[in-house]
Image (cartoon, rainbow, N blue to C red; front, side, top):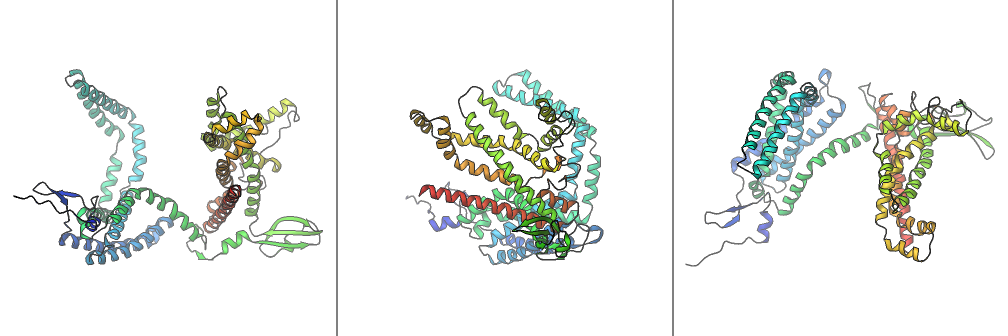
Length: 582
């Protein structure tokens, strides 16, 4: 009797029947392994089509519920988010229903995407309706009240783990077996004690009440249906039914693994970012339900300037156009000029932040470069100093700012005390470092530089590790001095590190907020707008003046400034590198 081998699938067959999630190998009764090419049954296909038709109706229902006003009106952010998602889900479900019934290749990815996202969004809504997010806070309170039984539960479980380790080494150890049983008993009794002490009846009663509401039942049913549809379309039979290629299958698998991170990015970063751009084109106030589209009006208000000549110095608004306030007076080419702005506070903040940038970035970068060269040496104790200099970078901004605020205090501050001690100031005449315009911004520069240069030092130390030691050895043999080695070898070799440090430090400087918010109390940005920054301005516009539209426009203006500054530095770095190569 001759033996016949099982047919080997060719390349095209393997492409349409992937051996991964979509086409696993099956074993025949004769013991031979072959690709399982079974597809979905007709009933399964009809169920998927029915699900997508139900998804069309459910998406329309949720879309309309999200639009409702009155006492049940949702906050504007989740309202627009739900409308956007379920509006897109309405279209995607219709397309998927047609594609699945017609057995098109693109139907499976579309069906998977809309079912999976619907399951995630509906699941989040279901958890909200069950008050799960608030129950986390109740859980913390219950844990506080029942901390002792919780501790006893942990002790019991530790006994069980120790006993299992002992039994693994010596299975006949009776003491270990007794310890294991005692651990389970202690953990069980303490668990009951924990439940009684934590008193979770409030959360349980709320959950029972929530399940009786139709909207909760609908959200739960939608979540389960979407999850089942996702599972069905993810199966091997679905991949075979829709002739999913290996390339598409691998792409779907990769997207599935990346989906938690991608969803977090889209929900918590991309959507708010794009929505703020949308809001910036409206006269959007939190205290007013009517939002008027004004196009570039917010940007025009922020960036508008007016220049007017005056016959006398220190002229006022009488020479400016309507709606403009005096920003500055200047004498140019023998003529008195008045510069006006529609938003003087914003332009003052831009002036302050560029002055801050010019002062703070060199003070954060140059000391770090020098200090890293010292710490990279083989002098004794350098490892300890590396940790010490890194501490300011990991300390909390709020705590550090409060400490510096005490040091800058005009009455009890250590800075004035040390100046009096060395005779640089009159005894008892404390200088108000944070209350005088001439030194307020400089004080912020000192705090920022102190907090930043430690982390920059660590970055430079990492750059030092990449410098070939042969360069230093050759320079020493040639008799180069320490300054020549630093200038001719260390600085050029750290060019890329310096570029990265400059970029990151500049971005942090342009986004200055916390230090000013803490140190310029009781009036943030004071004295007399001396420490006003763009981020502080947009914060005040958004949450003090309730002008969300204008604040969003300021945020995008600041983004363009940071983007332009960063792009210019990239261009300079590229030109310098290409010039060096040529």
